[in-house]
Length: 88
Length: 544
Image (tube, rainbow over the protein chains, first blue to last red):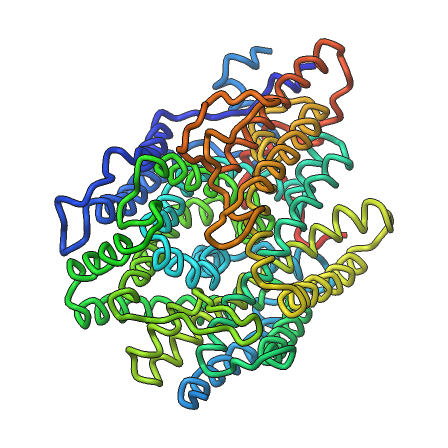
């Protein structure tokens, strides 16, 4: 069944940036009171810093992958060609 | 009765009511008698409208009152809302555009439509649709909890059935304009809601801390309060037992959010892939607001705010913390604006959720089983009626059943909706899973998840079952075997259930492939997942 092999995935290494914000979940790195910033314990302001960081990561991926070909006309095989799996 | 607040609140409520009815004519298509129009606003919302609509949809009134209430009561664990809404966008950035494209090519209106197209199985689609409806219903009811918290703070705190009358009136009005205008109503109202929210939060966050001695003082007050309580799980920092719960709850909630039908409704209503991508960059502005708002829970501790007693249930309602804080520390007219922001903030998501549930009912139950040859106009009619039923169901729930029950159900709903992740989200990338595997995984994850939730009690509040989503690892058993011994470390139930779901799905898929069972017909083509708005392949909007 060839249709099962054509996953039509497109990959850009920029997408790896999307993993970065997930490091916010490693609580032992920031579960502490000091140093405080504007009176906020480290636990809180550290997580606030991830808001702009997340925006930066997603924004970079958006800008850098903007030129990827999108399907406009009839079905093209571009996505499939990028992927070795669908070698048919 | 607080008249100034009430008058400001009513004036703003009147404004959005008018907007709700006028919305039917806003960016009008050829007809409203089609789900593309009524249920998805014509599938043509641009970046700004989508930002307000999805922002208004995801960051609900309930979130705005419940998260600070959680911080007020338990401390740092309530702050999971920030990591949740930060990791959310990088996680869904890629899958959402695929979902948009494939839905645009085939005219899918609901996630269950996609599942049916992908696997050719209306039974799997039915399973997804029912999960979606059941998980969304209590979410709508919770919006009412948020709205009621505000109404009671303004003095409309009657007892008995009569005490719910203001809520009932507000919801009848909402039901009527949603019936008439469809998704355009919440889209237009969301502008008012979000602007009010931003103004209120910015003022609150600048003004209130200085009034109570600055953030340093506020955090010290909070720490002092938590030190004085006998509970070991509270505090302004996490402890060694609840860190895993904090991280997994944030992750599980983020994975769940965009498979909720109402979130996808907002995404599918947008014009194109770039609109969605830009929004994934811009929506965290709301996360920032939510994080700041969460801290108001601590401000309320410093301010000595007391939750008011709900006359209908006779118990103090911690959800009134933020409204009470605003009421006591702002001039009446500004408190009125703040109350309106929260109140209108309940209407937007409630409308979108009821539309999403109505779409599911119409597309995946009514058209699939009850009236196969329904015309688009009949579908639209059915969806409008269903949206009324859903909303009145939610009101009845709040009025006749203890609101606590809705809160429990919403907790369960999050675990439930996560079980549709393999069929809805993973299927966007691969058809490796066999349809039997997906069904078996759903049953296993759902069953195990419900069983675990049932077993979580909290003696402190006198609840033996469904008292929370934090599962002590020591209680985790596999047919009586306890892999983690007596560990008191907690984890989010939804993640455990999802792991079981995936494991079963993999095993059954392997068996099904070995046995060469038929895996349904895929209606979609790999290139469908990359189609953009200017392609001739997109399905004409509201076509018959």
